[in-house]
Image: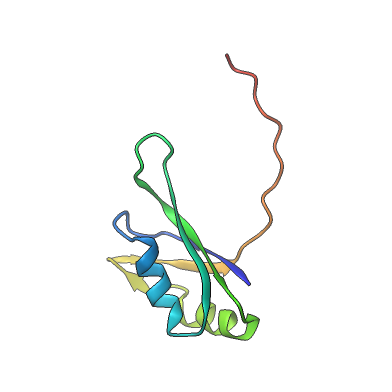
Amino acid sequence: MNMYVSNLGFHVQEEDLRQLFESFGEVTSAKVIKDRDSGRSRGFGFVEMSSDDQAHKAMTSLNNKELEGRLMSVSVARERESRPRSNRW
């Protein structure tokens, strides 16, 4: 199951997310989304776990948990909506 994790502190790294979620089961991927230009965290990421049961336990336990002074939000990730590209040149 793929989960969306938001309201992350800007110093949270992918390894931090992985370690946090691994206490609930096998993490297959952990990704912090970064700004394309600056390389700085955008404050959200995605964590994928191999077991839906373990992912639900992680979501229940970690949603609204404080990490680096911020209450993170954990939910099921939705498929990305396709948006038309803008032709601004």
